[in-house]
Length: 202
Image (cartoon, rainbow, N blue to C red; front, side):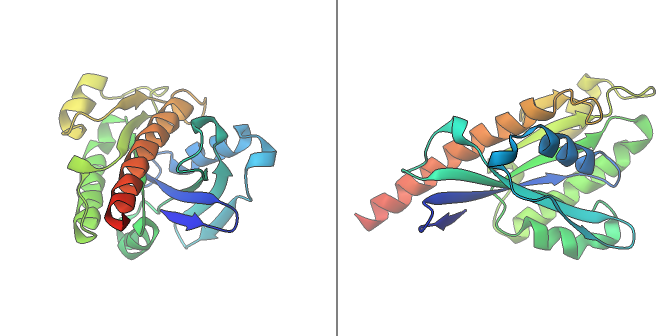
C-alpha cells in the first residue's frame, strides 16, 4: 500500500503468481484489453531470457473511495521458472493481494504445488502467510483436454478454503470474476489497516 497524497490516490499491488506458462501473461493481456483506456496506464514488459514480468496500473472507481482516496491498482506478473526466485521475491515486495494461477492440466499439478509452496515461503520471509492474506485461486486452462477436476484441484491446492474460479485466460472465462473478488478482499483489508493506523494516531 502506497498513498499518493498529491493526487489523493491509494496504490495497491496485486500480483499474478503461478508456475511457468500457467497463463499469467494471458490474464494480464485480457484484462488490459478490456479496461477503459482512460483509466489505465501503459503495459510495461521486462523481459528475461526465458520469461518476463509485465505490469500496468488502473483506477478502479467502482469500489468507491478508501479513506477519501481513489484506489489505484498496480497489476504484476512474476516469472514462473524456478531459477527466477529472486525476481519473484522482488515483485512480491509490498504486495497487497495475490491471484494464484494454477494450470489445470494433469501433468502440471506438481508444478502448481511447488510454486504454491514457493509463494508461501516468500510471504513468510516477509512476515505474511497465505492463511491470513488476501488471495484467490484461478484454475486456468479449463478449456483444454486432460485436466484435473475442480474437486481435486481444491483438495490439493485450496488448503485455506479461499475463493476459486474455473477459468480460461484465452477466452476470458473467470478472469474478471477472480480479479473482482481479490479487489474486494484487498479493499476490506486496506480499510481495516487504515482504521488501525488512525486509532494509533488518535
